[in-house]
Amino acid sequence: MPIIYTIFISILTVITTATAVQAQTPVTDEMTQSYYVGCLQDREERISETAQNELCRCTTTQYKNKMDVETLQDLAGNDPTKARLALNELIVKLYTPCMEGPIRSMVYQKCTQDAAQAGEQVCECLADNMAHYVSERAQGELGTILKNNPNVYDPFDAITSSASYEAHEKRVVMECIKKNL
Image 1 (tube, rainbow, N blue to C red):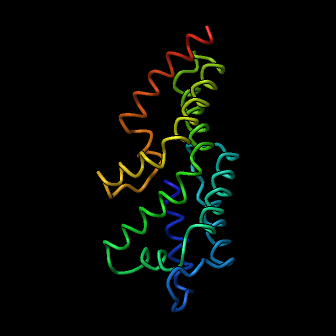
Image 2 (cartoon, rainbow, N blue to C red):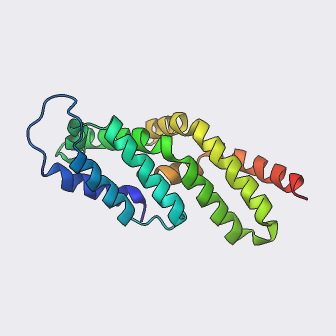
Image 3 (cartoon, rainbow, N blue to C red):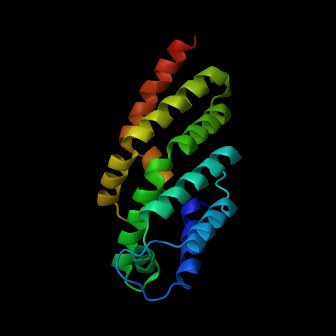
């Protein structure tokens, strides 16, 4: 199950305890802790446990620094347009700065499972290069992806299935194979 679903549920749980607030009310330490616990509990099978912990630490920091109670209330509210905009904001603000480690793990695991004959060095090369690519391009690409398809729920799938990612990955695979022959 994509991590975004459990995080969404943990946010909804936290929101039920929120009271009336003013504009741009920072999330509380309790809300942040609840977010972190929910993130750790939602095991993302496509990445290593280390990458999961890294993702949770990073997104929790982003959550604390960039989210506000009003956005979370919109996410949990009855207006589907506001809720979708809030979810897209959450995806971009929380995930794009934190995708490098999980993408590295995801690409490496997929490479070693699907192309074991390629070898560890090729898979490491591919994982490092794709993680770097995503760290530089995730925010812009996710913004474009969400404009074209505002109903995206999994930022990792959205990035890794984009045409630009796939084209770059094909180039990098060839470069890594040549480099490690």
